[in-house]
Image 1 (cartoon, rainbow, N blue to C red):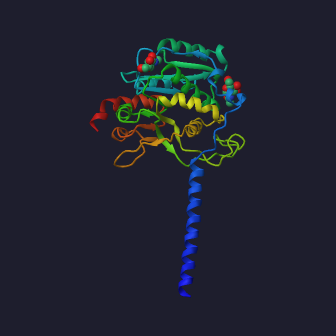
Image 2: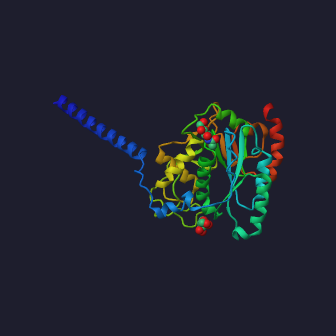
Image 3: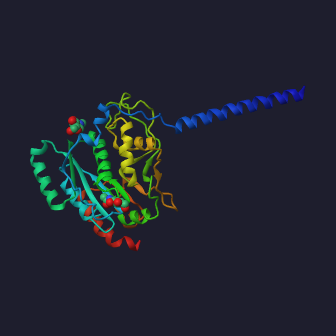
Amino acid sequence: MRITYLWRLVRLLSVSAVFFLSAQILRVSLGKHPPKPIPLSAEEYRLISPETYQYILNQPAVCKDRNPFLVFMVPVAPLEAAAREAVRKTWGAPSQDSLTLFYVGLPEGGQVSSIQHTLEEESRKHADIIQMNFQDSYKNLTIKTMMMMNWLAVHCPNASYAMKVDADIFVNVFYLIRRLRSSPRQGFITGSVIADGRPRRDANSKWHVSEELYPEESFPWYVSGAGYVFSADLASRISWASRFVQMIPLEDVYIGLCLRVLGVEPVYSRSLLTLRNLFEIRKLKYDRCTFAKLVIVNGFNPSELLHNWQDFSKGHRSC
Ligand SMILES: *[C@@H]1O[C@H](CO)[C@@H](O)[C@H](O)[C@H]1NC(C)=O
Ligand SMILES: *[C@@H]1O[C@H](CO)[C@@H](O)[C@H](O)[C@H]1NC(C)=O
């Protein structure tokens, strides 16, 4: 009698254990395996297809006789000449290892505006501006990002790494290049990983995404758009994957969705000892030796960048 009771209990427990485990396995596999990619309609793809837009300014030969180790790709608004100037004089200064290019769309007023005229003058002087004919706006940043990916795939396929980075970021290019020397050469992307992103359904939010555009309740892992680094092979692969991913106006999430199609997961970058995130997307007050141990810090206006860089480039080695 006693033994039968125990036996029943054991059976009950094992059956529930099996149920529990299979539910877990199902959950994990459902979570890991994204919806099967379905190609976009021609009309949907047209929005982000590189075929849709034409170059107004281009630098098709910058990688002709060299294979840069690192290409900085900086999206900026046409009017932000001061930001471009600060980047050229700081971390974006051309070097043996790196080169920097700025990506702009059309200014307000289009190709006949005085902003355009000034931009073309700047482009003649520095030969580092790439412009395509879509309206430059916050909502169009996904288009700009995909144009940058396509540009790299077509015009600089032999670069080792590329970094998409905003102009108001402090980049510790010295530490970054040192770390990259021992990073994977393919299928690699790192930055500030966001693992728990969700779509904002509030129509007033700057980051609003409708259910129609993005029906899922969470985002796959992605890296914050402030600054992320990837092996250059990913540029053409992400471009290819965009044939399966409907445009949403969140450029960094969009790259995450393309990575999911490719089965590529972004990698965290942390310091070995403190586990601190090396891609600091908050604003921090400048401190030479704190910054020497980070790859990026967010939130610098052009004059702050110029001012702090003077101290940093001279002093970071002594930290
Ligand atoms: C994005 O660019 C396209 C092409 O120039 C333009 O038709 C559209 O109005 C732009 N969207 C926004 C929100 O600026
Ligand atoms: C890239 O490298 C390949 C193989 O080394 C070479 O054939 C090709 O011409 C290079 N392309 C460019 C744009 O430098």
